[in-house]
Length: 256
Image (cartoon, rainbow, N blue to C red; front, top):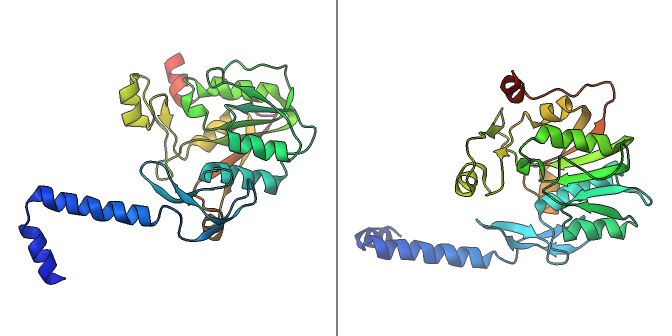
């Protein structure tokens, strides 16, 4: 090993780089079909999950229904809280095939709504028992207005499922309205049509919008069993009539 390292250091840098990349590619391919059995709460599959995403995430994609980590965490939280029941009126932003099939398997229908209209929703006040907004608010230029609309269309005892891209080590959400081009948004916020990365203050944002909220975070053992990203969160929000909707500090400052 010592000799091979010394020999490697004497090789031209392009050859060394090619060698490293080749070893990396073989390592990735060797783990592409999964290393350990998992269970999918979306479809009930038991077995190995495949690689998915860029950069690659190992043990990520269910080969039966195609679920990813976020979708499985939503299904896990929904099952535990018994959020889905036959006969419910459900509003679902940009429905994903996996969770649409999850809902249909439980005997419920939903109304689909597009990503471009989170701040002007169809339906009368209190029309829905459940609203599903999975990775939606990061697209909304004014997420407080979007949350106000979600609260408006929810029944008094309705519930809202929320997920967002969140950096757990950040106290504050990172956003800057001056960052507007698609390339700059991808650089700063991860995707060309994202407006922000959320920090731990996301829960406070939900509270300011007039909801009571609880977080669902899988344990270490559950993360392994269901193939989840450790530390990911699903937020379950319920209208809190006694709480007034208050603007974020940033927008309050802009308004003044």
